[in-house]
Length: 301
Image (cartoon, rainbow, N blue to C red; front, side, top):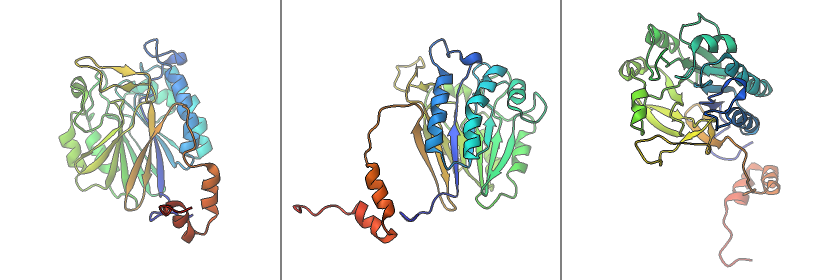
């Protein structure tokens, strides 16, 4: 249905991050109901991401790496993925434990190997890179991962590749979090040089944001669990049980757009009434711009 200059996106990715689930749905730190928050986010995904071709979860699925926490993630997200007909691309974060994550989510490979994967949807290659380091919270390449990534990015499909990694290859605003950065940026830049990576999707920082790395856009998804409050007075770090979100990433042949979606239910009002939207839908394409964009004449009736 024609509206503007751009057609519908070729591929839509729903980008969820940092769910931080605990076994049995226990509240995080005894305070934050991360399981309930993910259920709310899943309900909103059904609406906001009804056209999604894939659901990407960019790490810290579990807070303590418990098998039951991963089972809970499957219980909440897999029905939505099935309804949408979209695969889930799971990526490990610093709070995840490879053996439990691999076994509970049914992922192939040896227990301690990096949880790397390649999934192709609609002409886009989604490459999940496990940036976690067992026993540490900072990120880096494990043995052989740089070579694996270089091979995974070879011969890209028509719409190129999207790289998913928990630790964003960006400068971090919070000083303490700089100790937990991805520490192999130079090697990553070498791998990306000449590769058709159109975007990097990350989490880890519990804030929405964006930047560039090696001339590639980097998009951060805010957490569904809790948000980091960058306005909290330093040197402490401050978490708030509010402003949870997920992202929608729209891929076009010549552009990429991303939108931030509030993850939790809230009061809202129709800024454009449904009746008006239906009326615009019913118009011939040539008349839609005039109906919706033209301002009324000053002083007119």
